[in-house]
Length: 131
Image 1 (tube, rainbow, N blue to C red):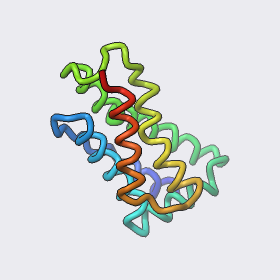
Image 2 (cartoon, helix red, strand yellow):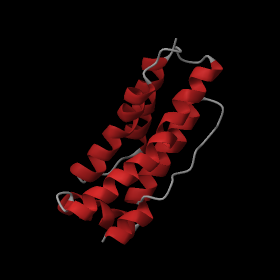
Image 3 (cartoon, rainbow, N blue to C red):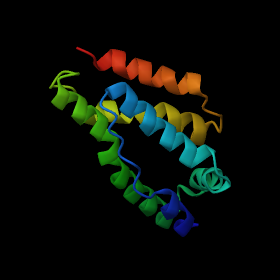
Image 4 (cartoon, rainbow, N blue to C red):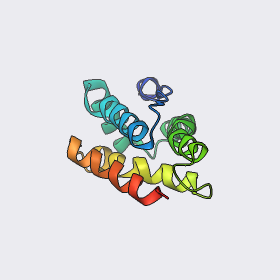
């Protein structure tokens, strides 16, 4: 089980489309497809739900999160560098806000994430961080 979770936890792609909207759309589409579009991804999500209290799984999940933090922060850091969003944007908080609705829906509620929902997340993030 731990080995299967670690395969899913590979370092995600870092997308640089030149816009915050494009970067977020690519990042969230990648996350959605890694969890929902393969039997392994769906199975691993179910294992994560069931085995979260297991010490070995908890350790793997912590390492997985650490691996993904930088890729989740990158779109916002680039947007700050381009001057698209304020320099004082709390990148740690906004990057968590970016992925939490997706994870919540797919892993905790075991519901599909369609393009309308995904773009709704992107719209809120872009509007909420714009100058």
